[in-house]
Length: 494
Image (cartoon, rainbow, N blue to C red; front, side, top):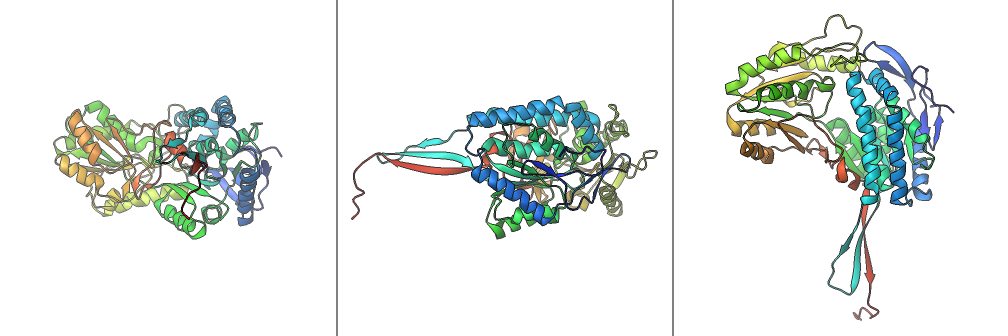
């Protein structure tokens, strides 16, 4: 069956190496810039989710992928990277039409997704075990083997890139996967399935893509005794539910990349123009729909007033509009419901007494798209809901501080610990703050650079485990100790 494009009324499931029509093709997929329905995706049933798991189980237990050589797996991943690059303009357009991000960002995301497959294609032949020195006449080995069948649940803010973050290291390790894209943004995950379906040396069933509701499909993956690992990116509340289900089923391995409320800390000696740009970019890129968004801007009091004025001036220059226009720098939010949630946060912040200095509503002239203006609140209490809860939209809380001690205290005073940034010309201060801020990623004089070569993940309630780099593939490997006795003497115990 040929896979439908987004101009058709139905997107299929991809199970066992075949595109199959779902029993319930009832999920509307919208273009958030226009509010128009661009496709209908299947709401997979529990039986269809189980069929995908069974296909992955069969492919892993009895297929050739888990026993393929590292070089064979690497070549497949490199071929996927090449195929993604060949379709880059089309994939970027589909990403923008389905998710709403500006086309310039979507183009970077597609390039990054190809780079992820390329990186893990090269890494496949570099994974090594160990020889352990032991005090006996024996050879002690540590082998690394694929963990098995992996359920992978991805969010809607970077649909294709998050799929690459999950699928590529799992395939590098020799695992089989069932990928569940977010309900709102299934289009490019299914296009990735189409790319994978065209790779002759990737066995059928190694990758499956199942669309549908999280409480049905995601829950089925987390609870299945035939799934050996779940990797999830999304909300902290859903992460807790997945962790409970994993514990109650078969104690499967779990990697969680969850929420954030990242502090972006500016000292008075920071380079001015770069700092202002970093404050604005850190929270408004991708419409603020970023788990690591610098949504708490902490500014040393001696520059606070001038810095906020400069932020407002810079943010006013952000061009909102048609995300397919290359000049656009902020598109719509992903769904109408999400826009209402973001505007709800704005209204609560107003009631809580925060001072609105920019935005706060929907821009004129862009209806019926799901747009929200760049929004800046100043003088936010560090304990206020706006400073504690993840908004996941273009809304920033500016918080003044006096001195390094207070900056670190405020930075650490949330349940989250995904990312942070510190801006200063004082290298000693920079490293003092780096060591004291509790976050899995800390940037110095920058905000949001993310590389496949480096680990990604958080502490506290921002998650468990790491993705990307060598660390990302380790989560898809099990360690096996092998002891080889080199002596023919009996043990001599009895």
